[in-house]
Length: 385
Ligand SMILES: NC(=O)C1=CN([C@@H]2O[C@H](COP(=O)(O)OP(=O)(O)OC[C@H]3O[C@@H](n4cnc5c(N)ncnc54)[C@H](O)[C@@H]3O)[C@@H](O)[C@H]2O)C=CC1
Ligand SMILES: O=C(O)C(=O)Cc1ccc(O)cc1
Image (cartoon, rainbow, N blue to C red; front, side):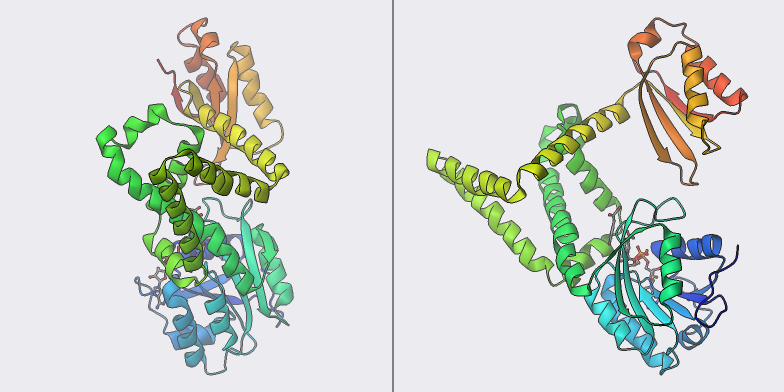
């Protein structure tokens, strides 16, 4: 692999501030394996061989991937240590908030771009299928290298100003996280009397299942990020205040409980918002909701085989399906995803009625055929009762 040269004509050395963190590790792996670049870095979590001074001197590109609340001051500290030697370098950051970090980067003499990959570090080595907000702030000689880097990530890049980004993220992240933190807090108070979260599962709706997925993902994540997004984006507080106002309005109508209160709820919280969304968005959202409902049902179906395909090549799926056809096994659903190693994985949902009419060892024979013919590796299978 020929590394992408920087403006001097040679491959840049990339420094990552916070390289032991979740994104720092992902980015180092990406830069080394997908771009053939040399990566150095620093992190108080056991990676302090290089001083700040050495890092800023040796890195042509410096990426800040540190906790949100610390990042603006950290950038300022690096700029002080660089004492102008960063002129001619590219400095960037991955912070979920853009205004403060980009302002701090601009106070240096480096070229500057702010980035926000809008998803957790993925299991696969690229950001394919993910959005990346890009705030070009001071770019000149590094623009071509940056374009090559962004293209290599395969992210869907959206250019935006830091101010617009932060106002949008107050709604996209701040509001979404706030409402799920609030939901989780209510579940914590009230679900135990009903037997706990698991006891609610058999009575789930699609909406509840989706919200539970979002809440669980957040609660499983790094609490520092979710707290910092609330506290360090100044546009979040007004959004949370409006949310509290809307919930307070709902509570007041419920307390009143009369016909007028019902009408007030319908008008203000349903009809006025529906007309704001508009008919096309409501129809599209409803359609997606139905599709996600079927997807969740497929993923929960008890009869399935899990198959990893070693080769992501044209015709692999066809050969796989042929084995099921040969054994007269009817497939109910197919869902593809990726393993942590990036291998293509298919969850094949099976039609229970067709299984009932077949010999009991049919699934074992399907699995054996898939493996002996080198089509795929069967890692799990289950025939539910
Ligand atoms: N994890 C995620 O889902 C996403 C994270 N981001 C952004 O990526 C950045 C990094 O996040 P994560 O890697 O998830 O966090 P993390 O907490 O896993 O990693 C941060 C790293 O920074 C290090 N650090 C702390 N103080 C430092 C200092 N003074 N000098 C150098 N390193 C220091 C920590 O030891 C840690 O290893 C954040 O700004 C976050 O907003 C953006 C999108 C998604
Ligand atoms: O867990 C996920 O996929 C997330 O969505 C997490 C996340 C956290 C912070 C960001 O700035 C962006 C994404």
